[in-house]
Image (cartoon, rainbow, N blue to C red):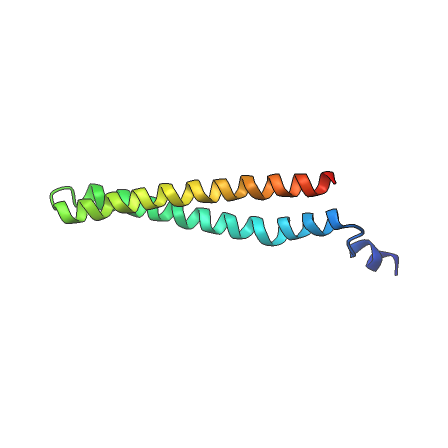
Length: 90
């Protein structure tokens, strides 16, 4: 019975840590990986189709979208950690 009680969160801080570790961080990691793949695909398209201006433009847009996505995910990660640290400090 004692082992069952050890798995139950004892405070709000424990609940926030479990949600952050088990839900938020994996989702952010997945979205960051998708943004990285978009950037890599854009760079690949840009390099392979260097002679076609429309494909090169599409590749450039893909690289820009990938960088913007990675920036947003990095910012969200920082904001989530800032909020978690603030709530845990209360």
